[in-house]
Length: 149
Ligand code: IDP
Ligand code: MG
Image 1 (spheres, rainbow, N blue to C red):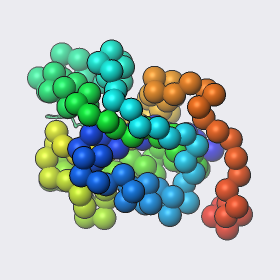
Image 2: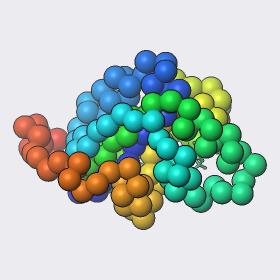
Image 3: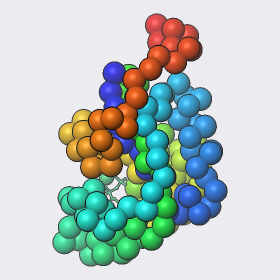
């Protein structure tokens, strides 16, 4: 099983999309093992988006991501990282396929509603930035035997 870090960004929260996004994750069969809402402090945002430091959009990205509450999650499942990246869709919503979360609910690169880790290394790093180990639960979903062969 893999774990990935997912965030409903402040635009997704403001636009009332938390429930729709979580529903898509749950209905797919992926398991939520950690969940919280908080306003990300600037130092945490800098750590989260460290790879983009120095890029022209970095300042506006930090301002945006810290501008209001966001919802952080850890999602678990077989190939969860790849599955969540394809469920989220392309970074630029104009290129995101219909049926993806960005393709269905967003229009602009700087307001693309959701974040998903892009690799095992990023997932481990991002989970560690936003959650302590004690905030992540371990449990069996009652439908797992009907989701996995
Ligand atoms: P990702 O979220 O699909 O992994 P990244 O390239 O890691 O995309 O960029 C992180 C976030 O930074 C994007 O989701 C988007 O909100 C923002 N971003 C990326 N590139 C640009 C840009 O060229 N202009 C404005 N915002 C950008
Ligand atoms: Mg990224």
